[in-house]
Length: 155
Image (cartoon, rainbow, N blue to C red; front, side, top):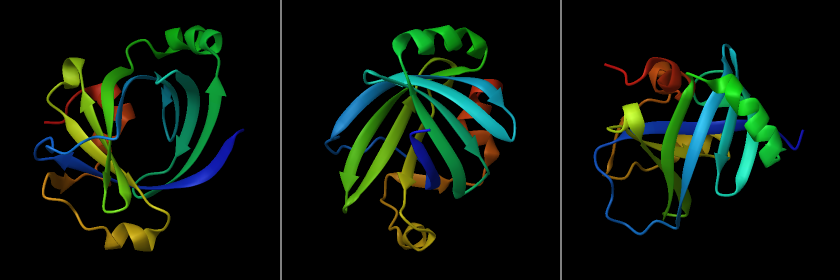
């Protein structure tokens, strides 16, 4: 595996899309092979494909990522039928930190989520939340991408 790590990440709903300059944007398509305690996700976007395994809930999770060739990705993609999402990920550099803003398409098109990764749990607690960020959903499993793919928008 190319990446053996722990992910420390907070997720928030957006109040509005900020009128700030993004440092980049990428169209992503994601599909899930399994959505159990350990999720197995395929992602394609920005000229890269990957298979990612994640385990855990909330702020700190295990994450392992493996790059895939186009042929490998397309061969596995059929296994994700019915468990897919499309979104555009915008990267916003703010106060020395990258905020990833996901704007969803298709059945999830009214949803915008900001994700912020941290080097430590302490850094995550010290994060100053910008005005365009709303309610935190880090611990709300309804807003995990795997559950959005399976269940659609939360009510």
